[in-house]
Each structure stands twice: as C-alpha cells, then as structure tokens.
Image (cartoon, rainbow, N blue to C red; front, side, top):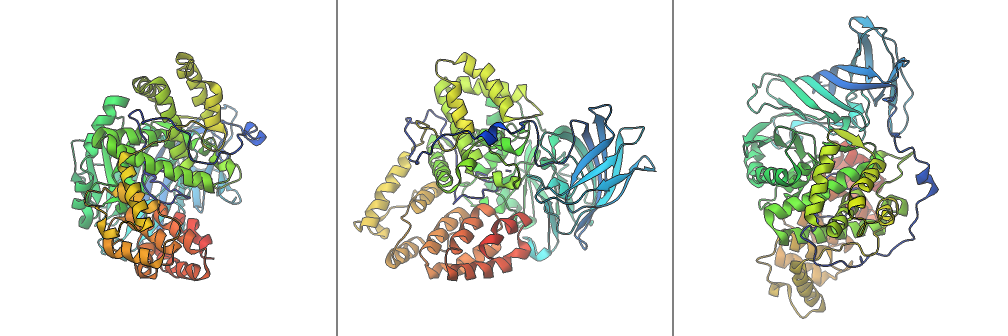
Length: 635
C-alpha cells in the first residue's frame, strides 16, 4: 500500500522520504528518546505462520486461480457476477473450502451445473464473514454468484461531479489490507497467491483497467478481458472504470487518466522508464511485462498503490516540477519488494515497505542525484521520529503484534522508515555492492513467494550473518526487528542543503533577518518542507502574516507545501488560511494529507466544529478508509 509514504500513513505529519544510500556522511546516535528494549511474551506466543486476519484454510484447501465475470452497475453501485475458484486439496481429507467475505450477498454456489451447499457465517469486526463451501465429490472448481454492497469497504463509486471531467462516473477498488473480500469472495490472505482472469462489463463510454495485462489500444466496447499470469496475493487485485485514456511515456511505461489531466501526468512522470531501467540494472529484470500508471480522482486515500503492472496514483503528486515523483519510484520498487517477494501476514508488512522504501531512495539517487536523496532521507527520518514519539511502544516494533486489531493499523512510518533505516545500517556495515548482491539473490530466492519475518531472519542468518560475522550480529538484528524505537548508533541522514535552511530560519525567528531577505529562489520543494516542518509549534500573528504575505503559502499549488503550511495555520489559529484549509479538506481524500489536519483541529472546540463542517461536506466523496480514519476526530 502502498507512499513516498504514499500508502496510508495513519500517523504521519507530512512529506516524502527517501533513504541515504551513498554511504551516509556519518553514523550518529538518533535524536529520539530511547525506550527500554523488550520483546514481550505475547510476541513469542504468536503463530508466525498463521494469518490472524483471515478465516481461510489454505493449509487444508488452497485456491490457486480465480476467473471473474463481473458487471459494474453504477446505478446500484454494485459489482454483480461470478467468481470461479480453482483449488487444490492440501489435506486430502479436506471437505470444506473457507473463504473471506465482507458485505457480499451470496446468491448461489455451483460446481459445473450442480448446486453446492454453503453457509455464510456471522460477521466478525475487522474481518467480515467466513463463507464455508462444502466441496463437491468431483472436480476442483466452484463458482460463486454474488453481488457487492454499495458500501463495500474496498470499492468507491464516484458520481460524475466527483471526477476531473465531471461527465462520467468512476469506480476504483482498494484491496489492501483486507478489503478484497468486500468485492470478491476469496482467501483474502497475502500468504495465498493466485493467478486470475477477468471479464468486466461496463457502460460502453467507459474503460476498465485492472492489475493485469492491459491493452492500451483496446476497443471501448463495454466488455474488457484481463489476464494476470503471475501468482499475486489478493490485496493486489484491483479494478478501475472511468473515462480513462492512455498516453505512452516509454517503451514499457504509460499513463491512464481522465483527459483533463492526462498530458500533465505524462509530463510529470516521464522519468518512469528511466527509473525502471535503472532498477533492473541493480536488482534484476522486471518481471511484470509493462509498468503503467493510473491517475485516480483526488479521493484516493493513499499516495499510491503498487497494484502489479498498473500502479494506482493520487493526483496530489502532480506538482508540475517532478518534486513529488519519489512516490512513483516507491510504487515501482514494489515490483521487486512486495509484489514479487511478499509479506505472508500483516505482521510482516515491513518486509514489503521497509525494503521498498530503501529501494526508493536508491532509485531516486540513481535518477536525481545524491543531494536530493539526502534531503528526502532527512525528511523521512523526521517522519519516523514523529511516529516514535507518538506511537505506543508495541507499535514501534517492525514485527508488530496485530492480533485482535484492524490490520489497517499497521500503516505508520515504522514499517516504512524504520525498516529502510535497518537495511541502510546493514548496507553500511557490509558495503553497498555486497548488499546489492544480497538483495538480488534475495529477490530471486523468494520470487513469487510470500514469506514471514522469521523466514527472512533465517535467510539472513544463512547468508549475510554467516559471510559478515565480523560486522553483523544476531542480537543487533533482533533489536531492530523485535524491539521498539530506533537502536542506539543507527544511521542518521544529513543534508548540507538543510543546514543552510536551518541558518536562515533561525535568523528569521531571532528577528535578525526578515522574510523578504531570505533568498528562496533556488529552493527545492524539500527545502520548503524542511523550512516549514521545523518551525516552532507556536508563531505570533506578525510572523504568520509575514511568512504568508512574502511567500504566498496559503495559495501554494504544491499539495505537500500547502499541507505543512496549513498545519502551522491550525496550530496557531491563523484564520486567513482557513478558507483554503476548508477547500483543501473537502477536495483531497489522501489520508497522509488530511488526517494530521483533522487531528490538530480536533484539539480545540472551535477547531473541531470547523473540522466537522468540512468532514460532513467531504464525506460523500471520501473513500471508506478515509472516512474510517477521520470519523473519530469529528464525533
């Protein structure tokens, strides 16, 4: 799920990130209060092979392929049709196939033309309802006729008014973490990988695309065929339908978007092909044929989602200057770390996101140079520090205990930034070339498999810990993965470009330099973010007016800069920015950008009332995940 914190960061305050591969300047102790290391007895009791967020029984009967035939009914806001599941018995004595569902209406289950007995169990919070299917005596397929709920947690139906073009409706799905079960009855666990085909029927004026092989020149006839030949976990099955058009960016890359933003998106992300080629040179061939982007309406709750062959992308990163394209590098990197080698349970998410965040930094350095890499690394580190300060200790552990919780709770900067920092430390200790060789072998060894944290630790023990026993030790590895906080002596990225920003910010705060005397002509977006995000919690009215009038911050067109400024405005009740704040909250559904604003507004009575008004207006256009994440701030 995938941002750069681009998925759904639930606790972060802003920004992009990127790690510091080029042998970061030096190793320093992090400026974060350390907490007592501990691995709780609860952690040791976890069954590492068990997915606590799925009813499925793949240890008895395992689904290997899905054939979908679905009609998108925009009037009813339902997907209607059949899912035919091909399975194998792992246990020859198995009599029942157990699937995950949420809010689905199951009409019939058949094998061939013969009805099959089934039972839909009572709904369980965070998990949905188990579907028990009695296996037929012969064959290895069952067909399930069903339709979705109009309130399916993994699907968002947008009216024409909620799209860029304002003429046609739009549908997109978002399956991570456990929302695929809301639009397909299946074994909704990342440890179960399936191939799939699909026939999607739509109004003829609309185009359907999926996380599968898409034909850029397919006729717009209302019936679309798809094939995903590589086995993928359920959370990577994705569908979108709308007034979509295609523009190529390279031999293997292109972008789908509504006509009004197609050219801007293609221009913004034109370096995608170069990113793809650079990643292949270091980490091996791209395994998925094409890599295209789909630009979604602004209600998309994440920065991006790494759906294979077709990453889903928020329009909030179209800044006009390529300043936010680390998101594209992140989603592309998932093609190796996440899509090819996948976390087996949501406890293991850091295996997806920590590796991908590390790769993101490396890709950004390859394409845009070390200076940009260093700046993004510092911003990412500051995001991590903010989460370390805000989260309970048990949520600071890479191999987090999520039993009894909503698996969406796993999304914070911990699996992303702490995971990447851990890998960067290993890189520094064994050397970059050696670590790159390890990653290439790791991706090949576990290709198209889903693995647990414990399997990774075992692999590390057999490889790097054996070869580089003089610089790596098990106790340190254990501390990184199973204990809270950032270990003492962890890498801390630095940037000379930010040192200059610190100097002028300090001078301005002291009153020895006016805002007009600050030369920002050559500042990058990252320097602006660093400038704003490291302001004191409180500024006086004169300071706020001076900053805004000099730099036109309230009117900023860059969504990241606007976010940072609006957060300052809320903390200081700077009312001239509140009209923009209101339109920002109503117009964007990306959780990374809106949640910190709602959280801050909710700290005062007046702010909470303001937040409630904005939320009620925005709610019809928000994705269910965004509604769920912010509802508590306005109640």
